[in-house]
Length: 341
Image (cartoon, rainbow, N blue to C red; front, side, top):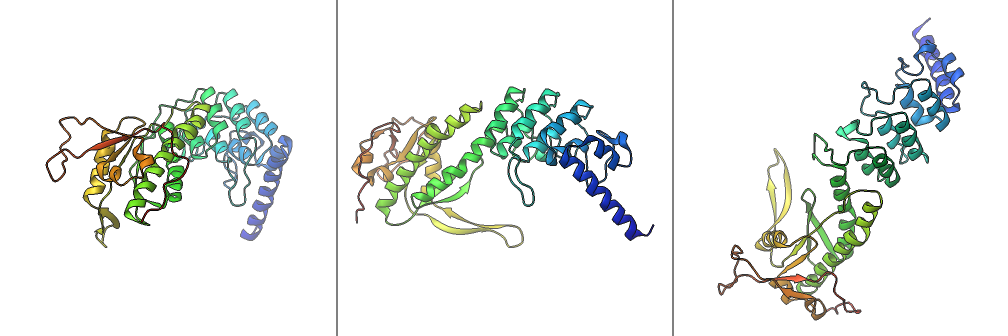
């Protein structure tokens, strides 16, 4: 045959194999491949790849069960980043040309029943639990934990994080969106944290906006995100927040030949990070400058912090720079602070 004829024959064979997978027809699949014994663990055409993996992407659930029942390996070592559990999880969301599968959790349960390894690693060195978090598939997280997935396993590349830490970092998306609602801007992400700044409309109002954002951000974590994490068996996120106010300069760091980025430099930025480090779990600490310029409804929720001897930052008269703790559970005024000139 000519090369064109070979390509046409290969295409026709692919169409028959693909149709058999989508119909869940084992007899048709064996008839379509060159070697019937290649089903379910032998070599398949390159356009198909591993038999069980292709079925997970394209076949009805009963056919996936059929392949497992006739001996399909749920823990292949020669995968290219998508062993069966991770392949199933990749179907959690629609992709261009490939709709999401509504039965991902059922496929996971089936694979686990046939002793799929709940901790087998794949793409990005993810375990299935990492992949479930990346896909934001809460039911899948629950199924994997029930099936023996280890929540303490870390990726061995990139961020070296557990699935729980990955979920916490994902929560930064919601925090960033919340900050924007209070006219703030995310300056940078710092691993499992972030630095935000509030500029307009005036120096006074931006202090109220920053504290309002911190207050609501803390509530978002403890009263919403953590409840979702608890429901799927993951550990809660713990946060602490530090705020200060003052001048800062926009500077460009780096070199055109390597890497350049804009940053904010100033005592207020540095001090805010140090204030945050003094706060305990779940606490919001404010520097004196922020506290002094707050609306009274916020100041009523603040108490001054007893500073230890190792707090070395001072004001112009030599006194230690005061810090204040905002009561995150205290009652707030019903009216928002007015816009003061």
